[in-house]
Image 1 (cartoon, helix red, strand yellow):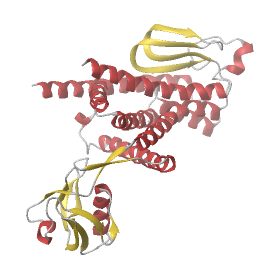
Image 2 (cartoon, rainbow, N blue to C red):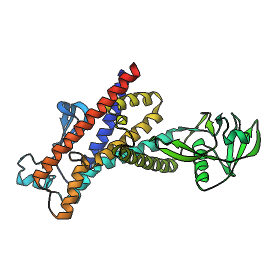
Image 3 (tube, one colour):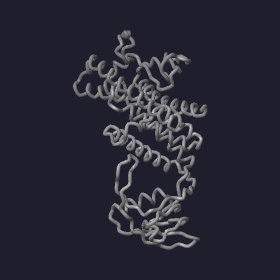
Amino acid sequence: MINTVFWALVVLGVLIFVHELGHFLVARLFGVKVLVFSLGFGPRVGGWTGKNGTQYQLSAVPLGGYVKMLGESDDGEEIPESLWPESFAAQRVYQRFAIVFAGPLFNFLFAVAALVIAFMVGVGEILPVVGSVAEGMPAQKAGVKVGDRIVALNGEEMLRWEVMSRRIKELGELGEDALVLTIERDHVRFDLKVIPEIKEVKNIFGEPVRHPLIGIGPSGEEEMVYYSIPDALVKGVTQTWMIMDLTVTSIWKLMTRVVPADQIGGPLMIAEMAGKTAQQGATSLLFFMALISVNLGILNLLPVPVLDGGHLFFFMIEAIKGGPVTETIQMVANRVGLGLLVLLMVWALKNDLTRLFASEF
């Protein structure tokens, strides 16, 4: 339990710090005075005041953070005329947009950096060794056996199970009637012709999809692969983009009720997963942090008032109409947005507690 809490605080602390650091650095870049840089909400636990007057602090509730800038809120604060150029409100709309957008952007950049490090440290990749052969499926009919290593597919060398699986799917969708598997068995290589079957399976969202299948499963045998800096960078960017695409798709599936709302996870789920991935090693933890960082960035970009995306939406309206949205509209929108956010957090916590008690009993 202590280990889980520790790693949850580490993961959330790092990702919140990265997010707020984005706001902070771009604000300072435009000369905006930052009053408070806080990790956490609520009462101040500790901290210090920097030479630039910024109060850096740790707050009691570690489920978020904030950067408070001079002139950021319409709470009636009086700004001395001499300090007006340093206020957030005095900046042009594109500068304010950049300051707010920097938080999610830094989350995406962190994900790339974490994945680059993970690929350089080394990742275990599954080898194309057959661990199971389904009864009555094309692979069994063609003579594939458990323990066979597939070294080539239609003459193309196969080093990883993931690549081989993807190529079988691609070739099937292109209308290839037969696949030629080059098998290595007892140090002997030979070819087997396999005709895939198009079957209906469920994807990760539970939707029925039709895929070409031959009926084999991996043995789970892995090989550690260490990537060079350029290759790791390409893999990191590609993987981050895939996570972003999957996250956006997942949110859409939730909104359209393809995925049930009870799949939404909250802080308890993150804590549990952080503890488990930390036990699996640094690479697993880095992949998990990249995943959560992308999710945090995209969720903050949703056009919901009180989130970064809500502010960005108002800035775009301001840029189009040539003036800011009225305070009344912003106030009402922020209250609605806050209400929606609280409901989402309560629902996520309810799901976490339901899963927790279900696993215990």
